[in-house]
Length: 237
Ligand SMILES: Nc1ncnc2c1ncn2[C@@H]1O[C@H](COP(=O)(O)OP(=O)(O)OP(=O)(O)O)[C@@H](O)[C@H]1O
Ligand SMILES: [Mg+2]
Image (cartoon, rainbow, N blue to C red; front, top):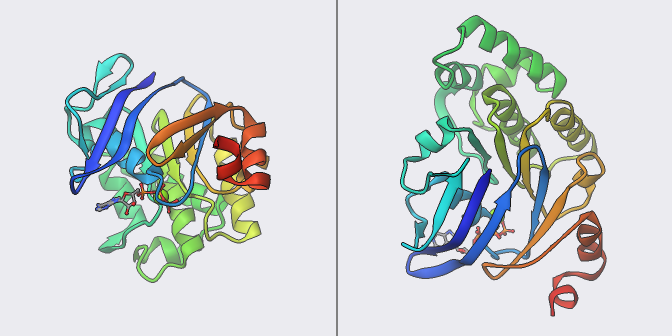
């Protein structure tokens, strides 16, 4: 469904992703792991079409066999891809409720509001956070919950979560992970993570290891626990 072919990405004249080819299938859970700076977030940004990440002319990104690497980020989102940011930005003057209403122009605003509040309840997000400017003064864990909330209301068929489990306490992790499991349905999840703890709740079909911009290894969930025990160097050398 989401096909990356010979994806090479350059940022500031530095090649960050090198000839990455992989097909993500519908309904599956993928995990991408790799050392700091190996290019995981850059890969996610490139899929979404961030203008700073230049892809080579030989690279192809396709969704349901149609090229999307030549269309704008908002169009890619319209075709069904959502990215939850590793470091979510604040948005002054706009609450998450307003943002989700604006981002859902074809839906009944009341229904969007009710769904937002219901999901916020499930994620144990306080009402006060819903009425504050998005992410302003929010703690690391609160931001991750707000990202999860946005993902669920916008309800895209492919959801990329960049370190949704980083900086969250055990209870917040359980709330986020059980929420994502409950609402997964037939969606594809791509989880970028450094840890195995979220994988207790969301069992990955495939684990991809990215090292220095290269897709070095693909395995099943055992690969993630091997990484945790042994680190990257031993495993891929
Ligand atoms: N906009 C940018 N300008 C300059 N360098 C960048 C930019 N974006 C990414 N890089 C560099 O590209 C490399 C890969 O970064 P990236 O954020 O993709 O790594 P990552 O695998 O997500 O790491 P982490 O696990 O720490 O989140 C890093 O060396 C980073 O400094
Ligand atoms: Mg990253």
